[in-house]
Length: 303
Figure (cartoon, helix red, strand yellow):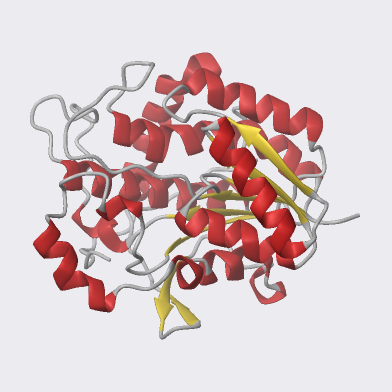
C-alpha cells in the first residue's frame, strides 16, 4: 500500500513544490486548496509532470472552521490510510480582517485551522502509524508575543506581529503535541523553510517593494523551500524524530534549532485553542500522559 500524504495549501509556493516532489516519488498525494479551478489546474499539472495517477484533491477554505472540520471528516472517510499530514497553508495580511467565525484572519488560517485539522485527524494517523505531522512555521516566531487577553489583536493590529504570533503558536502546538504523542507511533515536528520568494511578498504591503528588493538576492525558490518539509515528511532518517524545530543549512542541508519554550504557555495556548475550536472539534484525546516542567523563554531571529 502506498504512503498517503496530505499537503495543505498545495496550489502555490512551498506547498505546491512539496506536493510535486512527493508526486515524483510515486506516493499517494492529497492536494489541498481553497479555489476549485486553481486546485484542479494544480492536479492536472502535477499529473502531467509526474505521470502519477495516485493524486487527489480536496477543497476547504481555512477561513471557515466548519470547512476545516468537514475536510477532516472527508479525509478520514475517503483516505483512511493517511500517513503524513503537512500543515503548510499560510496567510499574511497588512490589515486586520476577520474569518467566517469572527477570529482574526491570520490567527485563524495559520494556527486555528491546522490545530483543528490536526486534532481531528489524530485518530486516523494513529491507526496508520508510523505516521508524521509536519508543521511549516518560521523563525519569525522569535518576534511572537502571545497575549492571552488579546489573542485576536483587537487592541492594536500589526500584520507582521500577527504572523509572528501565529508561527510561535504553530511551534508551541507542535512541541506540546509531540509530548502528548510520545510512544504512539506518530511524530510531530516543525520547521522554518528559509527565506522563500512566494506570493506573501506580493499580495500585501507588509513588505514594501523596496524591502522586497533588498531581500530578494537572499531569497530561495519554492523548490528549495520544500526541501526541509520533504525531509521531515518522507526521509527514513526522520521517521523517529519527534518534537524538534528544523531550519535550513546551506542549500540542501538542515539542522535542529533547539528552542527553549515555555511548557506553561504552550499548555495555556492549547487549552484556549480547544475552547475556540470546540464546536468543530471531534477528537480531544491525544496522549496518554501530560509532560511536566517548564523551560525559559528564548528570543529568535526572524527568518
